[in-house]
Length: 130
Image (cartoon, rainbow, N blue to C red; front, top):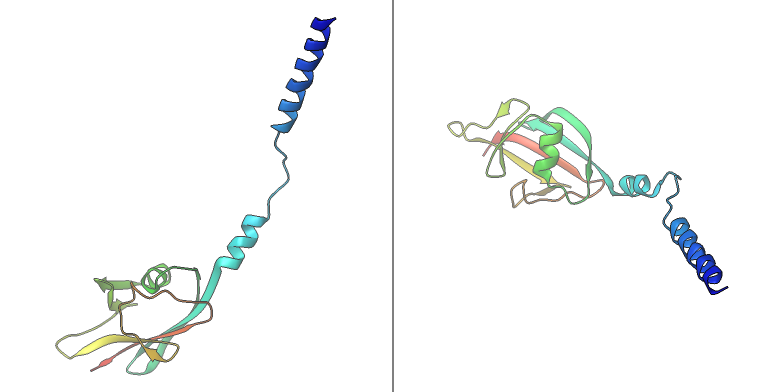
């Protein structure tokens, strides 16, 4: 009798363990929702001497730097985080033309590799003489 009880108990425990370890095949949408929530947008405008030559709305992930966002969306050349060429428009030290940029109308005080954009911000890069 004891053997039968132990056998039934062992089988019950085994069945419980197997059913508790099973996985469900329901698709998870929480990751998709998180990705949508972390997706940010900004507008980047490229100018030469104050004249727009390209304006683009870009999408990026929270925490990405401006330099990373630029490299994902434009043809970029840089030196130590400072932009030297965008879309084939290059700065010229001899003529003292350099890329300067503003974020939401305020002049940047650091390089693009140090700035993290936020959703809805506007960035203007202007290639002009100092």
